[in-house]
Length: 140
Image (cartoon, rainbow, N blue to C red; front, side, top):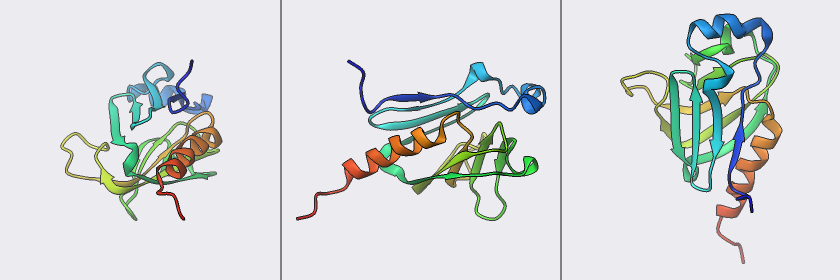
C-alpha cells in the first residue's frame, strides 16, 4: 500500500534552459522534491533544502515568471525568498513559519519561502494543503 503522505515531484525543464542549467550541475536526474509524512526535501543539482512539514505555512501556485528572476537558483532581493526554477510558466511558492537554509553553502542566509517549478504544482499544492488541514487542531 502506498503511503498517502509521501509523494515525489520532478522539475518541469523547459528545453530552452536545459543546457545553461546543466552548466550549473542542474539536470532532471539530480533534481526533485519529496514530501513525506514529516518532511519536505528538495534537491536542485548541488543545492538541497530540507524542512519539517510542521514548518510549512502555505502553498500557492504562481507564475508566469521572467527568466532572469526564476531560472536556476535565485534569492529574491525583496524578501529573501529562494527559487529553484527550470521554466517560466508556473511553479509553487511554499512559505515557512521559520525561515530555512538552502540557497548558499554557509547557511547564513535563511529563506521565508521557496518557489519550485515542479511538473505538477497543483498536485504538490494539494499534498501540502492536505497536510496543513490534517495538522490543524479540531474545532469544536
